[in-house]
Length: 206
Image (cartoon, rainbow, N blue to C red; front, side, top):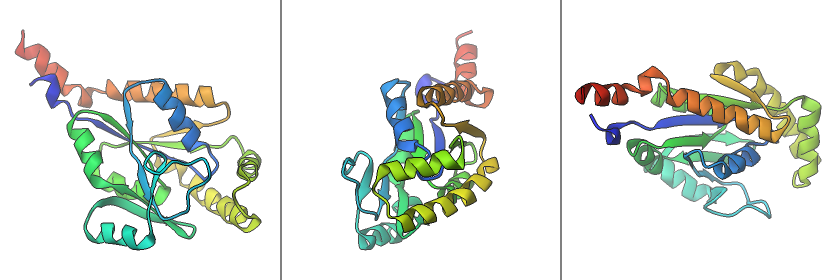
């Protein structure tokens, strides 16, 4: 068996709104550790700094529902008033190519991914405190008071489910959190169940 038969690794990154998922993923990409970031679909409006096709695919609710009907969405969840989902085709293609794929998804969606991909590695990004989380949401200046209250309520529900994840990473200092995630990814790549291709390769050439 050659290296080209190596199966890719799927990673879930979840965390409450304001925990810093986008910042973490941007820094991971800069470190060039060979990860492929999956871009989610969403029906929410883009923030000023967000780029369509890079941060999200921003689509109408009608388009989103059509993709679900056509089985083009791996998982989806309603978060607040908006829908979020993962396009299926690119994820399966990247895994077949042996890539490490990161999905930034909500807790509801993560549950569906675990059922479909039993060997998925799941990471929960935890704020250092609820006070810090609320301050981060307020600093964005893009949410109404009602939105912030709703997001904080949802955050408590999500944090209560963080023990369902393989790893919990506290995002206090971004660089430290990114380093923790890099270490987890490297360790998981070397897990014996994922190194079977290498074992076969070595024995085949003995």
